[in-house]
Image (cartoon, rainbow, N blue to C red):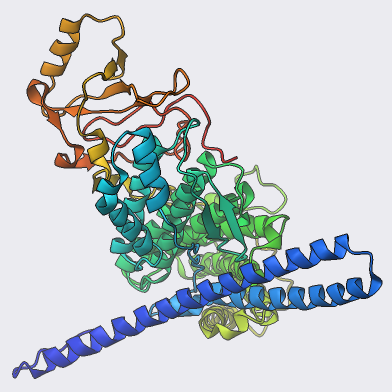
Amino acid sequence: MILEERPDGQGEGEDSARLQAADSGLKTQHSWLQSRRTWIHQQISKELRMRTGAENLYRATSNNQVRETVALELSYVNSNLQLLKEELEGLSSMVDMEQPKSEGVTVPMIPLGLKETKELDWATPLKELISGHFGEDGAAYEAEIMELEGLRQAMRTPSRDEAGLQLLEAYYDQLCFLDMRFFSPARSPGLLFQWYDSLTGVPAQQRALAFEKGSVLFNIGALHTQIGACQDRSHPEGAHRAAQAFQRAAGAFSLLRENFSHAPSPDMSTASLSTLEQLMAAQAQECIFEGLSLPAPATPHNCLAQEAAQVAAEYRLVHRAMAQPPVQDYVPPSWTTLVHVKAEHFRALAHYHAAVALFDGPPAAEGELPLPTHEQVFQPPHFPESRGPPLPQQPEERRKLAKAHLKHAILGQEEALRLHALCRVLRTVDLLQAVVAQALQHSLAKYSELEREDDFFEATEAPDIQPKTHQKLEVRPSSLSQMKVADIFHRLAAGLKEGDYIVSVNGQPCKWWKHAEVVAQLRAAGEAGVSLQVVSLLPNPEPRGTGDRRPALLGPGGLLKSQREYGVEIPAPVHASPLPLLGWSRKTNWYKTGGRPQPSTGGDSGTCP
């Protein structure tokens, strides 16, 4: 929107009011979608409980009349479940509502809905654990518990912007602190975490904190997809922001897939996360193509042909993954159809740009080659290892080959429109049909331009376009490292107590060190502080080896410092890191000042029981 300057200054307030009203409308629409999804999840949970009870009664009774009544009730419950799942699929497939209002026409994207969860009572179990294990008054930590509960409540409905991402990441960081402080094989607060599947709406429960952390990480990736889908991709900046958002979404799903196993819900299974990662990578590649195909700066058509072929290849992989079990059982069919439509659409665009490059582009001068060369762009259909056909130099030969590519483009775009018309959900997305129909009109117009009355020959067989991108796509991890966080329960580790045993200094065992050596290490600590592992003897008898190991941060001269005084930097998670991130069995490792809590290399690799 371009605002005109008004001498009297009266229009500024009116324009601001209109912008605020539009923003409020978008937030209201988004809130309605989330509320509706929450209600559907609750109804699905209710129907599942009814079905379980009916199935148990059907198996237990031998009365034929009761069995007939229960069978009728089961059919009714299953029908309700089917209707609820279809409505949830419709909400998940409302891709047109996620698209921005822009000047250009862009293909709709697929954003993911957030996983929903129920309210959780942290107060009772944490107070009991603080009193029983740490030997402190649990009631003295009511403020910290309320802050944690408020943070969890707020992250259930994050805004679709950077502030919403920071809210989710802040809660994820607190879960890392809680994991090291309160959860271990010997003790656990006994909380039951319940989350609803993002794709099916079926609830899942686990007592493992790894399930809570994995669900939050999934929502971080899902929120990135919503942010990417809301960008105005008709401008280079918007296309770039959308590509980055989808890349970070793919990074979040990749991180979750590599560090989480035994998923209790389909959306967090290995097959589902792998498919979602491929989908987000394909959508990021599509954004890169859209940025290159904008009028300014102009990109050569032979480069655009390879870029479009790359997008088509990415979507073909996604469609193959979505069409196979078990993913096809819970991915919305409209997503599978949309991915198939895009694969055909971008394959047709590759042939269209190849035809334009052949017909409109001048032939290569002697000693010069096009960029990229014809042999690099065109790949023979039956000889993929060869360098491809030679570039036609005669105008008539170039016209015939361009016409053959346009024939492929027209057939591909007609197939995309046919697939679009077969899907009930996609038929409501007029924008998608407009994009494909517009591309078909361009191909038909160019074909008519090349058509001649004396064309009686059979069209030359057009070679396939070799996929290639000139902007390397990187699966970027989420920006978990760009925040400064402080442990809410830092007071539980604010200092050493009489009778504590220091067993490690900066990761080095000091069991056999002399007292003077330990003191010297502590006094030598600078502003960065020092990492300690401490064993505290508790008044209650415990099995040997399960004593509480509490860390303490010491500043210059050995003086204790609360970690809240430090801006704790969280380093970026390394892609494909072998270190577990979601569940660790060994709780002796702590963080150094300026760093995120590092998981132990031993023990369970982030699995949930």
